[in-house]
Amino acid sequence: MAGMKWYKVWLVVPGTDGDAENGPCEPEWWNDMEQAPDEETAVRQANDKARRQWEEPNQYEPGAEAPSDREMGQECPVCTGAAEVTDEEYAEWKREMEEPVELPFG
Image (cartoon, rainbow, N blue to C red):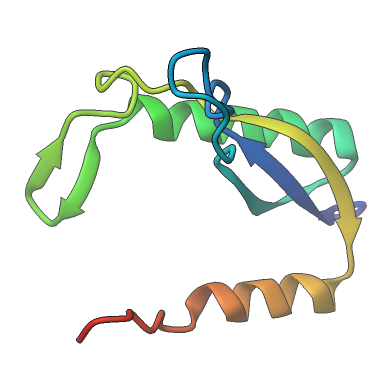
């Protein structure tokens, strides 16, 4: 895939910044990675992926489907930007994503 680069993309769930009744709250932000020829394509791919995941039923374990985030009334995440990263930065991100998470209870 000549010309393909890795991009770190920023996603946010709109409407998670609070409201008049409850006051401000922390927006739900996270990063993902997309491989694309340019930043514009990476953002479009991230938005398409977020929409698909938002519309698909949630899978908590094999054979156990739950309503999709869309069906639950949640907002669809949107990509707010992208930045090109090196192959090494992508590899580090991937390694961190695959590490087991230590839970505070046991």
